[in-house]
Image (cartoon, rainbow, N blue to C red; front, side, top):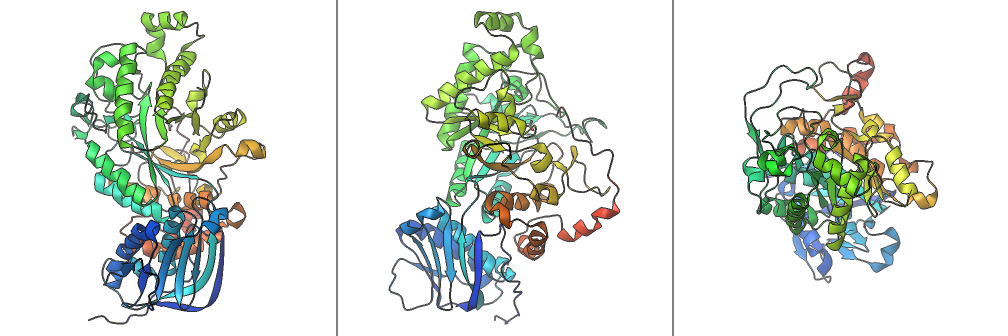
Length: 542
Ligand code: ACM
């Protein structure tokens, strides 16, 4: 028995805000008679839409490829005349008789379906049947993204993120039109990707003996509890396919030459010291670097070959950050290499090191992406820079015709505190409330229009040193990742925080139904009550 309940209808609360939306007269009625009609190229998207709506409807809409139905339709299809809306733009028109979703490419049709879900009453996100009749307001929407790189980085290395959580987050992020999931898979504290040729990377490198308690700068001992886990290659293939169905690219990161302690724990001969070391149990910068030898390059190429066989992403992230050079400085063999190569110093050696990797990736039709330290000692040709220590690295790279993804700590590091409330859970430091994320502009005004073309977009980064549970992970992500989604999708002139905040207040019911943990918008009103915390210093040297 289905009881008619009044559905919550806060109209047109869409996140991210579309480029253009006009409310027309009337409503489309979605009932059991409604069918989804698709063309060949959008059939899978139609099926995905039917599956997404089914729990709250209590029935599965039929997906047909026959246009000649007399039934009311949600019509999906490719229309090459919409090429001006780009690879991901779409048109969505709802009238009393039909909902029409069109785009020049399938990605746009997918994004149209995600907008359509948000035009329905918020109860459509319920996991149990709510009603058999639903209304969708008549609208005309034309929409397209501001940037092609709309990313989010998850750090599975510091605390392992279970497979089902990664899959859940792909759904939630794609719902907000995020199209890049950057997975940080290796670090000093854990190696999280199965590599068949080097099984010890996960047998040894995926587990640490224990973990520091409290903040690494004020340690309160160790927890005596082993922590670990890794994704099998099959797991990762499943993640990649699940994301691809939602038009999201998974970009893997294999960090080098630093953040390599877990690999060196597994295979000490990869390190400069060639001495045994444990997987790291505390946070911060560790001195273990790969040794720049032929054997180590062969290891890295073998690893990257397996990585490339799993991840079709054009970009392969090789880290490059925070590689303090003490071990290279102290090694006679490394110093002899610097001399033989006629390099100035260890920074130039890092540049040379990464150039070897860049060439290898290029031979495999892949592009090297790295943190902005890859500028030190000279940027390898063709490299793309992820600018995190502010915007300057990205500006320099764009000015020298390199592509850039903007991820400055001050605007998009979601491991920072989102409130001065003393009750906030322990974080690395820093202060990044949601309105500060929203105010972020990825395109620096100093760039010429030609240079600005090199800004592919932006992403938020969630480092997991202090994130031990999926609830906490989601709490840090939401709503700040949604603010970022609007920054990278919506035309700049349509961004307005108070309007975003109003839509977010409606949107929270959707997140709650999707079982997503988030920091409630009402808490923003309390923020003035809390004095700025002196201890929320920007964390240097992490
Ligand atoms: C970084 O935050 N170390 C890229």
